[in-house]
Length: 347
Figure 1 (cartoon, helix red, strand yellow):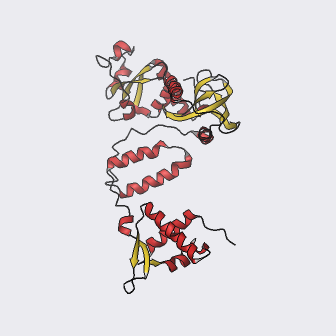
Figure 2: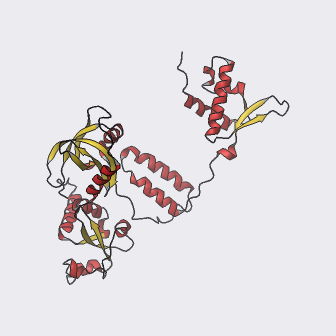
Figure 3: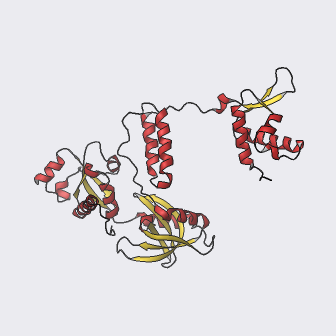
């Protein structure tokens, strides 16, 4: 004997039937033709089942209409009001499509890339002037794929279960095992981070997911620790965000790298790279670079992470200062050109 159909599936079957009926469906027709209602053991059971489902659909905002036959007042049927149920036509401007495009590009993991691309293609088909220039070009969010660590860590955060993983430190390159009580997963500075309590160190720490090597392993039972109170969590996140701040002096092509421009600062007196940054404007190579570019100053904390951001803009951005950031960007570009895998970052 086949398993009974789940109530949610029965509701969906009922919606499909009532949407596609040419006029109306009587209760007898519903019981005999809509999958799930044949499971009712008696007429009374079917009546209760159908009335409950009908009320549920109306509570969900689906307009189920009662239609009386023209010749008999007790000849009752049902259908869904198509005009009230159907979504209005979607009319998206070029700017709205641009914002949706940014949202779709935020997720770069392979697991959802296909779905976001398919959805965006459908939206472009109904948008206004789909061939219009992208009004938000250059603002693509640069949050890299979280890799295989994201799913297990998300499960551990929700289950309040400790995890163990192998981690490569950014500054020293040291690789060692960590056991952490995971508190939050955050997208910051172009990547995903875990904030939690390091049991070995006995303190809050943050970990960039891209530096986790191998598999994340659950450790111990679920519910093994309490969520931190808001004050503790805020202090941990404030400490993580804090750090020595540097300022990059960049030469940027007009109307390019808008995300970097949005982060730029303008010191009192404007930007004077000659005085503050040791850039020799008399150097012919520098003068050539500045001929058709704007000079902007952008703060950053991690040299390695910021260099990766700059490299993503290609020749639209040239680093004028500081020298160590410029050297890091040049090294990354050379590695990319040679299609080699870079060594561990010390940024």
